[in-house]
Length: 251
Image 1 (cartoon, rainbow, N blue to C red):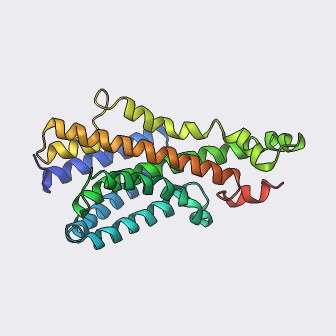
Image 2: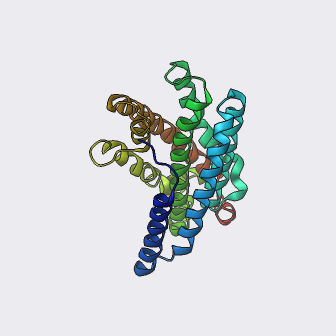
Image 3: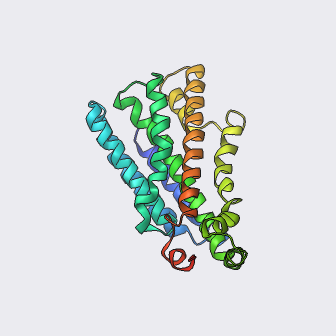
């Protein structure tokens, strides 16, 4: 089964985007314009990506360059989302999560060292890693702003800054992982994730699709857990913080 470009697809896209905008307006979510921009960007970027990937998958070196570019864009995006664009060097938390997981996949020969295999698998894992990085950052920073009094109280009791920060964010970090864990927990029952559908649409068997999806889900859990842990350490060390918290969270 394949889905080819054509007027039925374009019509469906237009209707779905219109439904999104209308739903935003009715619910007064205020994200209608953002949805339009995101939708147009996704269409343009995926079209461009299709053209680029068709070329780069022929060479492992070009595929590696494409993956590096994807990682850089993910880092820039997540740093903006957590309102700490200047802290991008500390998004190494994402690299700490992705690199060992990728090493396991390659060392076990689970996926071949070919662009056609690396780009989709790493792309899915990278996207989910970016999401958890953003969730952990936003929830932790919101808590640090809202509970400034608790932070100062901890300092007054003799706790060091990193200990005071940990008192506030310790319960927020796991919250960033819960959506992904729920997705893994309900896979095959509530959801049929992307890798499963992709293999099925590509003509693979249901068993092959399930195997590919389980592999991707396990990789996502591993990289997200490492990333969240490293990010929390960087926040406690006051290395990864928005500008306002960098100033206010003083010893």
